[in-house]
Length: 421
Ligand SMILES: [Zn+2]
Image (cartoon, rainbow, N blue to C red; front, top):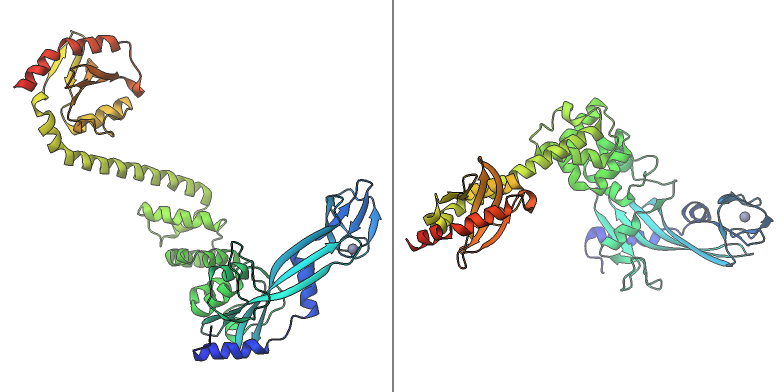
């Protein structure tokens, strides 16, 4: 990609002037960003893969090398080689521009020899004091893996993409330099696992980020940097949190809780809601409330649809309405409205309402009751005049099942008569 804008030309010039990684930076990366191993053979001989030192008898899962002092992960193996790799960043200033330099560290261990390390710079994120970014990086090779770079390409101006951003979220060398505006806006100390270029960019462009950082709440800030839309939604409430000096124990839960409060129509500017004494308990309470609201909404929606279907139902079943017969104990009656279908369904826990039996043109549904208590729901075919199904609570048969079916079959003549009318 060719430099076109003034800013890009400035970046390209600065890109040429950066100094190589120092010995000290590379040593830090080796010590702090990759795994270190000790291999132990069945005889108990243990070898430090960092320095090659050998000794006998270590029992723990982790240990320190008696010679070089490295913290080692102990593995029982006859292998002689191991590899380790990581990405790490050095943050510095060049020509007045803030830059995050991302290196890939490859370490190859070989039993009995000192470890070999190679650090290669792969990406540079440039930011000016207005938060404008540019990327110079190696070309990526096509393929499935994120970290496949063409090491023979140059660190050139390239379009930013997800993979560069993903890789740039990595270890940070603790000694860094920052442009004055970043320091003024509160950048000091560790990056606390926040992706550096994202934090620096946000800090230069969004004064809410500056406020949070200066309040010392890096953990909260990490959540907002990772979920920028949450910051927009939560900011008015978060200001109350800061004012009240309220500690949020779990950011993810707190944000979810706020969204549920909103759903329940609560005031997100009210400290009573925003700063709960027991966040988890309140979260669970509102989760239940939202569940109930959802259920009510679902029912309302269903009833609305049912009402729209009422006219169609009357057209289909109008001539059967009011039809009922009895054997003295059981009364069988045609369900006479869409609402009646839903009521029958929710009383007996079956789906005669949800499945819209009221719109089936060639069947008729009855409620069989004793002393006005629902016993079973009967579906009769209007083509064969046979009972298709008769079901009680939760779709099970009751002790009256056979009597109900018989009663309906005996009165089929009444139904035929209505059809003919
Ligand atoms: Zn050692």
